[in-house]
Image 1: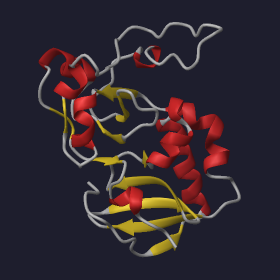
Image 2: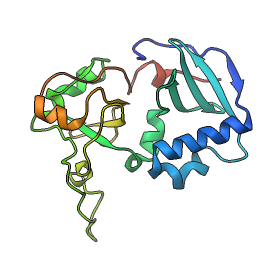
Image 3: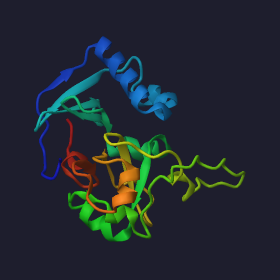
Image 4: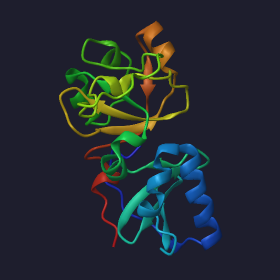
Amino acid sequence: MFKKDISPGAKSKVKSSVQRAIRSKITDTYPLLAPHIDEIIPKKSQLDLVKLPDRITLYALDTTPLFFQHMDDPLIPHLRIVHQFPSCFPRIRIDRGAIRFVLSGATLMAPGLTSAGGRLPSGAPPPPPADDDDGAPEGRYEGRELEEGEVVVVEAEGKEEACMIGQLRVGTREVKEKKKGVVIDAGHYLGDGLWKMVLD
């Protein structure tokens, strides 16, 4: 989606009523972000709408990109938001071998998720956190199966921060059953044009 460097297009102020609707849409889509919404988009702040190529809209606060949207697709957080609030999004993990492909803009394929280093939701409820739990590195992949069209964070085996975010083209149950095919074909990844873009 953002393989090439991009230059921001026309910038305009978002009306306060639209800004309230965006805040509401964000908390509906990402319920775990609800406690942080005032930190992400303070009530008295002025949100900007920035036009990007390929009919993509970017919402930014001053020079900080927050969320982007392609036409009527869901609002997708910029990776900087994901890194700031990593536990607020559903996630999957790719194995070490898939990292270089994802970071070069390749389509995320099922084998990178179904191999030994990959992780998909188990479909079982997550275990309760233990007192000595330090983020439950493996337990965070427990939970419900994810459906086609859901926005998901892609983490990488052996890495701390997420490397990609995008919409699933197939549900995780189907990925586990078929073990092949496209999982995410257009996402925002570390080092892509959106990541490197500077807003003035």
